[in-house]
Length: 325
Image (cartoon, rainbow, N blue to C red):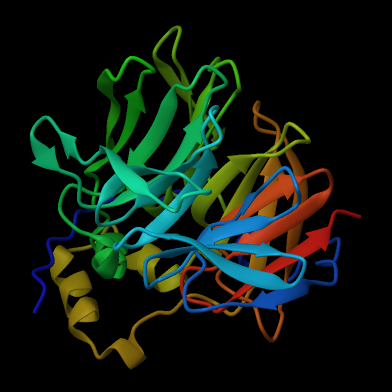
């Protein structure tokens, strides 16, 4: 059995919005595409093609009703981004940071070791126009298969890392509570990283090395984030906050150990909801779309391009899109 070592933490009060199951502006009608298990993130190509990575290691390209394999990492691809030279940057949970030639189908490791230690949970990334890469390593202790344990523990060993164009690697932020989605300004004037277990999206200023918040108290668990063509930071909310977990977080760790030991069927689960929000880089909420759909839930990836929002799901078999009203 997995050893659980919970950390005490007093979360901020649950926002009233967390208790609602639909947004004030209804979730628009979704267009869905069935895929193999686990299209965690979504990325758009210049020709309108959609790229995603699935649980068996493949990178898929969806275009004009066809689904083609671009590559097979042999691991578990999560976050996807474009590099300036047209190659695909892949955050592979088990192999590290990869780059993929989408024409040849070849892949190579960019970063798998940090200070001589192998990454356990490479998760999401953002790329500046000059090729600087910002990416998250969710946990020093646990991999993707133990993400629920990481949330129950409130582990704080996540990191935000930076890879310069010359290959220099830097650990920029440490002690993050499940470091997850990453977004950045094209010129690198700010970088955002989501803390899934901290219910927040941090904003880091590389010039001053100061950290503030885009949103300090989200109503749900943030997953991937991305900068849209609309200039907004889009946030995938995988599930609303769970009142029971928030009550247990400040209490004796033994209570969460007992909760973790319960059969999986009795443990708290992600709510059956589709939920994304969008904020200005300064923290103003602009869009909030939530609702239910029979073929889509637990949104873990979100991408806005010219008014269309695409979504992926770590545990689903569907990607979905809608037009921003």
